[in-house]
Image (cartoon, rainbow, N blue to C red; front, side, top):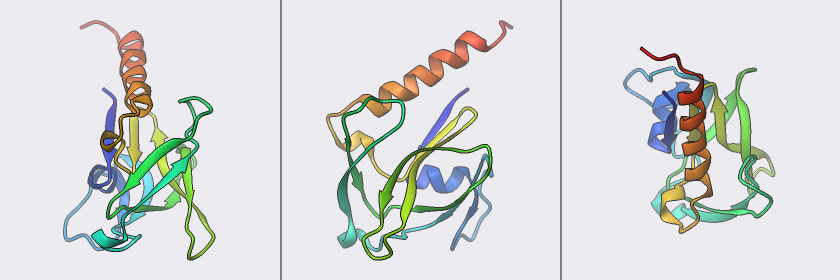
Length: 132
């Protein structure tokens, strides 16, 4: 069954997460830095290119967002955002097997393309699963 985590969900799916007092699910081979962009007042929006949803940029809303610090070899980076402080392009949407995670909140925009991408993941998983 496909699983999608946004922000806190990304942290929980990660193999490694900074500043946690508990174990994550370690479902994705990613390392994340919690609240890497700062506090609530440091929230921001950015237009980003996301693989698999078309050519039109997606308007992403980042609220106390984690940053993907490392990705393992089986992780596909679907989108990045440029950190204005460092100039580094950080992954903000990733996929590994049936897992997808975003460090932004697609549900806060009227654009449903990320949701449609995930629905397609679910449909594809149903087509490849064997009946019980």
